[in-house]
Length: 292
Image (cartoon, rainbow, N blue to C red; front, top):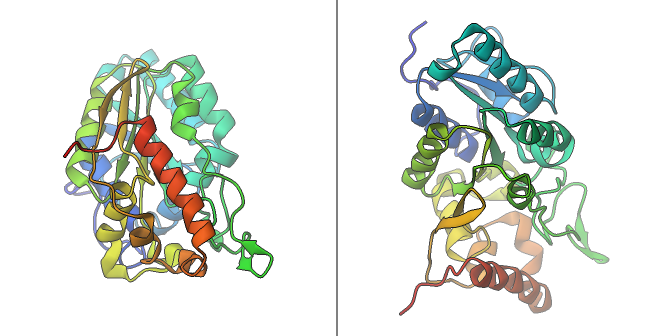
């Protein structure tokens, strides 16, 4: 099999899929000497439609929740065979399989100290099964299981802080990234691969199907999430904040109005105020605001 590029075209992702771009950036940054273990989800479905595969590296799929557990076994086998130093191991999944269904397996991988990079592709809902709410769905989002209407403005829960949960395990590297900033994403993957021990990167990946934006708006929408402060980009090394992307904050309405999942909020200033508070808290917490 021709191995270059390491994530090939011809897969069946939706037009404008942010996850497809992110997956290619991740594996190209990690390199050919990598084994990938994948949870069930959009990425697994559109990239490995039997008998075809988009992957130019060894790639394993088992269940919805257990890429971290399977990758732990792969890493242990490589150590036994004396091949771990020459081989990277990546476990990956979507936001639902990472922060909800697979959180226990992820926690075990981090706790045991496996030399694995875990990548969460965060498109903020269960997109491949019908756009159901996940633990990482933002507040007030309209999904099929958190519908907006006369009695509800959408998802009532805040976004689950999975990077902070991983950080609490005391692992050497935790970062967030966005498909809207591809150079930053690639740099963080390369840094993570260079560090021994468990690492976690959460990548914000826009989804035209579930977010209901035009397919050619994948990058601008992703960038706006960062530029409003709703999706802060940061890096922690050994528990210390070592990097963050500073911004000149834009109002959250600029991000919300680009997507059908937030359309119900545009004439509701009280709810927009709550979302602006979320962005403002992120900007304050990570000191994101550029000084004039």
